[in-house]
Image 1 (cartoon, rainbow, N blue to C red):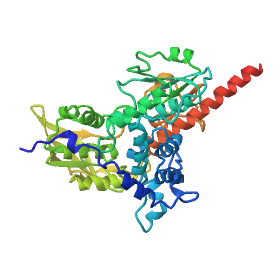
Image 2 (cartoon, rainbow, N blue to C red):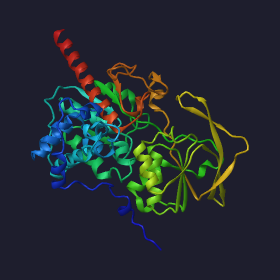
Image 3 (tube, one colour):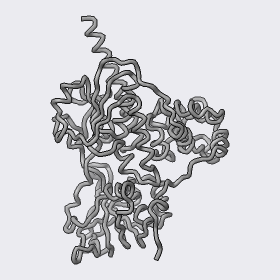
Image 4 (cartoon, rainbow, N blue to C red):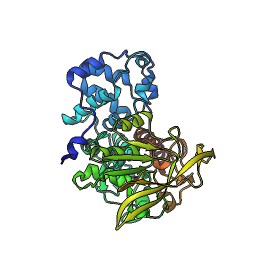
Amino acid sequence: MQIIKPEEVLSEYYPPLTDHEALVEANRCLYCYDAPCTHACPTHIDIPKFIKKIATGNLVGSARTILESNLMGATCARVCPVQELCEGACVLGAEHKPIAIGRLQRYATDYVYQQGIDVFKPGSPTGKKVAVIGAGPAGLTCAGELAKLGHQVTVFEKRELANGLSTYGIIVLREPVEVALAEVEMVRRLGVEIKTQMELGHNLSWDEVRASFDAVFLSVGLGAVPALGIPGEEHILDGLEFIETSKMNPQNLKVGQEVVVIGAGNTAVDCATIAKRLGAERVTMVYRRTEREMTAYDFEYSFVKNEGVEFRFLTQPVEVLAENGQVVGLKCVRMSLGAPDASGRPAPVPVPGSEFVLPCDQVVKAIGQEKPAVARLLGLETEKGFIKVNQHYQTSLPGVYAGGDCIRAKGSASTVMAVQDGKLAAFAIHHNLMAAMGAAADD
């Protein structure tokens, strides 16, 4: 019998670059003027500058260049779709191999964390207090940037640990828990107070928050994986919980021999990868549209196919079959594509009489997340169910800002976009607080 050790098969996919490898890779860079890689980065890291500093042995300066633009640079070095962004824009990619920007970024940021070096210090106190609700990448970035500007910041997080999906929801192959928590501690050392297990509407009063702070930033992410509404759904596992267990308690994760993953996004890919690597004989991803409409990145799709995962496109689950509490199959119906729906993609339509059963002993769903409930709780104006903000990240409530996945009514949600939201919101909050102070002084 094969004994599988989760810590071995789910360890970080890419090993760290050696000093020699990093130096060789950094010296391949052309250090372009007006570099397309920098324009392709949503946080606009000066990529040629940080790579040049690696080439000259200035790793602290390199990390500072990265973190000035992206405070969660260690996470983004691992989880950003660099093939779609900076590396995809590299001028060497046309005829040669693009620079390994993500791995070089990881090399520099890991160095300062491993050496215990803080590249920033808290700013001179302004006397202003800001609350951040939610300690994901957007919230931590906003908090850290505000602390650098001298504001007193308190972050409230409902989970036991901070850094949101970076901690709980990104597969270890891409980001170990330790990396996410190192960023949390970096923000704490900037003077930010992080209070965990504090949830708005439960043990955290909105009225008290509003009365105690000069501004509030909401970075509450999204909700749970929505229900499919099919018979036998009680036997389906939540994909985010599946990933969380693989990170926090891998020895407790039970994986079937024939696993079906419902969905075709990046989270579904992660769930399928976990199942395959932890010993499932067959893993099948089912999706009601085609390969063309799936939301997973192309490189993720290629990766999971290389892992041996199978796909069933134009397939809609209609019932989970179970005997004596044990899943034995997933009843599905074949689909065809009709006219575009509200998402702009062709709407799947059931094909009459095409039902069939996919044998399996475990079903996991990863079909997106519900819209933020906080919007209803606080009476915020919304757009397509997401919190609506203006160009300065201000919500419909005065002094209340928002960013991250909870505002992503347009475009795709990602860690790097959440970081950019948090950074720009912090600058907007700072500007308005300082303007208010100036106006008060004039009075």
